[in-house]
Image 1 (cartoon, one colour):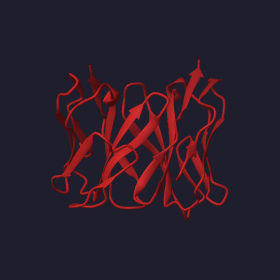
Image 2 (cartoon, chains in turn green, red):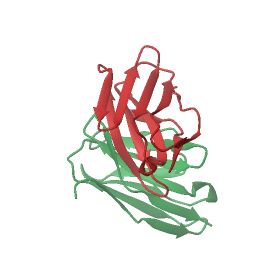
Image 3 (spheres, helix red, strand yellow):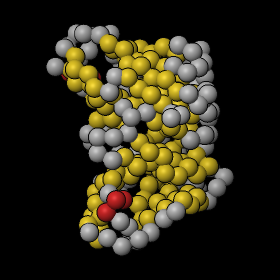
Image 4 (tube, helix red, strand yellow):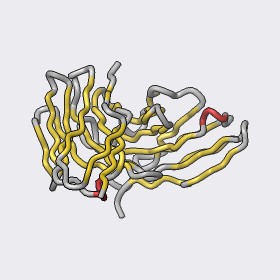
Length: 112
Length: 110
């Protein structure tokens, strides 16, 4: 099915460990995004890539890095995980500015 | 900085009721507004997308309106059903980004 695919769906990390969340879309969209969702805080933008080859910080970028590997793939890396990064992470894509967003099913990350 | 507000945070209605969910935003310089549905533990499903030049969009029992000048949008759900129980999120698109409200958790009682 066409859409946004995120892996893994669940992950438990120990404080200080690193990991990469993967995201791929098959809709030929130009823009991709990483959000985190926390109770009482809603969805907050971490990083986005308006087009292949560009990345920009969102509202809460500290502790994260991203890579726009190609037009399809946009990964999010936690270099040294902290308990404050326990959250649900969503990847999204859109054709370009002004178009609707399509979201992946999320990665539930727990840092202990 | 764009801020999106959805009040109330939770709503409980009896089955069959017509209801309106409200969304307000502070900066009217937007490209579009999108309503999403989120079921517990799941991802976001897009319901309706309204471009800044449009006033409303309809899909089945759902109708969303946009008043950009006043910074308001409403999602109208006709003849609510228990299957409509979910969290409804409003998000505004501007500056290559989508800013979300915190959502309204709707419970439709049989």
